[in-house]
Image (tube, rainbow, N blue to C red; front, top):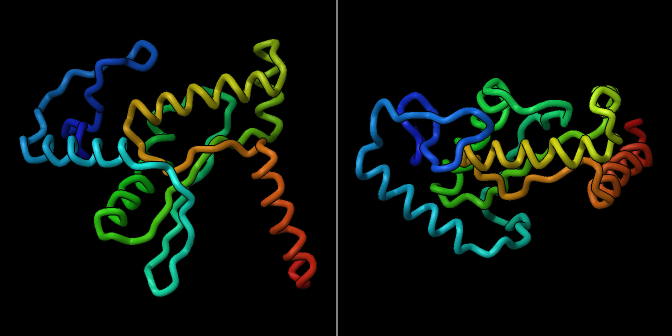
Amino acid sequence: VPGGHTTYSWPRKKKAVGNYSATAAVEDPPEWKALYATEKKTRAGAQKKVKLPIKGKKNILITSALPYVNNVPHLGNIIGCVLSADVYSRFCRMRGYNSIYICGTDEYGTTTEMKADEEQLTPQQICDKYHKIHKDVYDWFNIDFDHFGRTTTPQQTQIAQSIYQRAKKNGYI
């Protein structure tokens, strides 16, 4: 069980998300609390820097399915998507591997357009609204991304187009 969590997986935080709050059924052992406090201080004090592959080291890119921004994330998003990648990312960090855990919201598609129409907002407003909700929920669950981005940024668009163009140039498309 990750630090900061009870044995039934609801995080103990002062701030509840939405109408949900949890009461701990079983307390974390003191050694888990100490480890969690140390890890939290270390991660909080760490400067976010660009992580690049290091020759001769074990380099690991970790990601998970990108959730759509057409609704509030539910427990299935957490368990079936980001939690397993978060656990593996923490394992890699503890082993000293050069790893990076990236994820973000998928902001393209018909579902985003339909949700915008339903809420009488623009697709961009829907993306902004639900990206923040997703980020807040994952933060509440202490999911420790190195980067949680968005598919609508110019940088992501440039990278995706570059990959496509190289694949096409090399005869894969």
